[in-house]
Length: 453
Image (cartoon, rainbow, N blue to C red):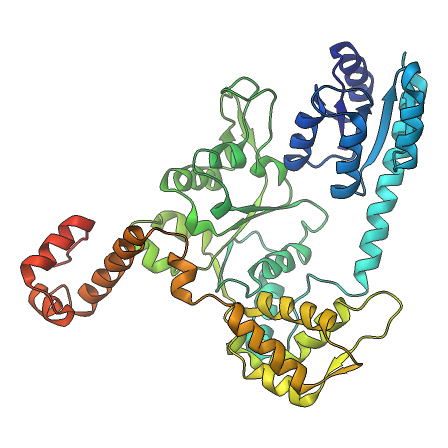
């Protein structure tokens, strides 16, 4: 269902447009001002915008500028009073599809809506065709590890089995999830991704399951959750181990029953969703430490896939370099290449950020270096910059903490590790750490560490 956003400060105009457009089968969103309308566009995919030229808080021309910059494929129809025709013409020059004068002609509203949505569809298809020549979301490589992953995808893609993808940051777990979806019978249905680590705990339930209008302060309208948006398709729970235990319990129930309640809802919503999950954490350690539910793990981990780090598949680096060099070549130009000596240096470089780091490196070197063939010297120069710009693994984890917080966090991790290494023997662990057993007991109590007998 195509989605239309109406941004107008007059309730009567919004009501009339809502009535006629919803009767045509469109899903309608409403905003009383430009600020609220732009906020909606950040969370809801919109196909067409009706935009009043004269708005409170933020003028229609300013709203149009933002839409053109951030949502270039979304068509905008300007609503203008007679006195604002000059502004409407200015809006057309800025990229608006057309304008409608008040009072609105409903026949013209429907005609322009259909035409604008058709243009938006053609724009999306055009962008898709442009990226097809050098797809950015394909798995590149011929190493044994990548061939094995392709085999697992081929065997499991068309089943309904849930898949858990394990691997470090930047290894391409999302690409594996998309490959599973694109090779399944659900390929023409939605692929909905949720970054569980990026959603605050108090919002995760609303994000996943949606809410009814008025269910809490700020819930001005019904919102469908990711489970509902993925109906018929695939739901990808990225960084699933970062989800709170409370959210895990609700996800487990939804997966078991394929039913759930929106927040504030009285009727259960039924869906048909295939769930794929991913994490960069040691999931068994998370279970042992009580941070991840074992029953949810067994539900999600029907087919496990481990994605190797780039340093485990260095033979794929030349293929990846060639792919990214082609990807970052401007239209109409021939792709550049990196010398054999430069490639050799790159295969020995420790890519701790994996494919994501390599991709960013190739984008930078393709812009900043000269010549059809990038020399070993240029590669060495940029690899040196790469090393200098990196944070150490410790700073990645503790860099944003205050000193006391970082010290306590590190001390807790170290104590837990040494206790496990020494079989939870207090005397031996204290000796290993160079502290008194009484001091160790105090720290165990301070951090609430569990001693396994």
